[in-house]
Image 1 (cartoon, rainbow, N blue to C red):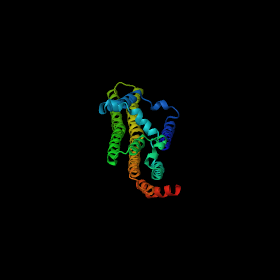
Image 2: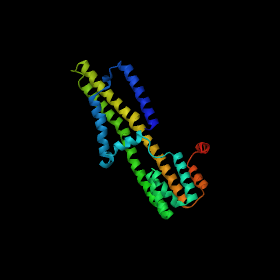
Image 3: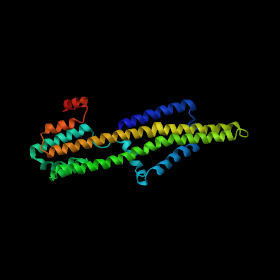
Length: 260
């Protein structure tokens, strides 16, 4: 579980729940509107189907999972692992890394190490792994795009729901009872609220988080690529370590050296 995502969800849900309770005195159904759910929820879903290919829409559960759970190795973990592999390759030869393959859980790193062990040219290794990075980047864009669509069109459908409610309100001013008019006004306001919550408290943060996670994962893969090429080139383990450290800010480099 991604701890910061969980903390954010709990804080947001708690704040929203507290305000809802204070306003409604426990009558949470006051904030429910079937018409609002249909307009904002179903309307936003329709937009994603219109704007994205079906195969990308079917990957939505994976996008949500990527938001909720940490994926891949952290940059410091990558540095430590590449340092260990570099030391072993320098001491026992690159073929000795074959015995370490079962311990490496990262497919990208495993693929690169296999090519290095098999004696594939560095240019070919880099070419293949960069193609993998490019493909991964495109997959990540699809996930961010989904939440960007919800962020844009969710509030838009909320506005449509507001206008529909207001039309019903004004169109029945002459004949409707005050309760019916209040119901129509509530639909208008609740639809706006649903759209605002969807865009600003759900889709926006989730899309931004996926963008940051994508950048971190791409950086981790780039570090692995440079480490693989350094190991294959027979560089001193310290040189390999310095290449890895170049990806970290100065303060993180100091902490990592202290930990080492």
